[in-house]
Image (cartoon, helix red, strand yellow):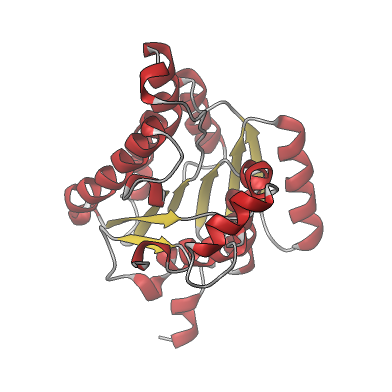
Length: 259
């Protein structure tokens, strides 16, 4: 075997959620660079169409498909897999990146708040994994990468609901890695710290807050979406074929910081 094939994804199809901006967009682009065809799903139809067109222009030999869908809605999650079936029903890689947060103190949380956040951050990911399983298991080596957070491992100022939801993603990752190993499906998760995205831009624009974040980050800077994407794509590669059930922090050393 050509050793370079361990570092390529030619002929593989990837489904990426939350794919129009930020980490999801960076993952889609890097998967495309390594030869995968990408199926992009995001809620904002215009932003998704614009990004898909950018990828087609930049990678004219690549294959890019897009579908606007709100993955907090179970019916629209089903529509994603109807769409995949229309594209030929093949799938090798699943990237669960979609998520959101509205930070609030624990005593202010209402039942509707936890139902909404868990539907988007946890149940959508589990549903996509379950629906993807019959397609992924058709291949001898397929992979799921879930985007968790350092918030699911230690306390940060994202609020209890977000931390709980990401901790659930981490445990889902471990369980599915064990349950589905015999089906040839590897399952791993990434735990990013502050990454420079649209969602974090307002917080990081506050100089005092920015300095606090940098002060807790040994590498002394904010991460970039491309740096999370590189870790995600590595976990998809044949080169990572013996890695499953792992939670990989992409955090500039944040979780290792002590006094």
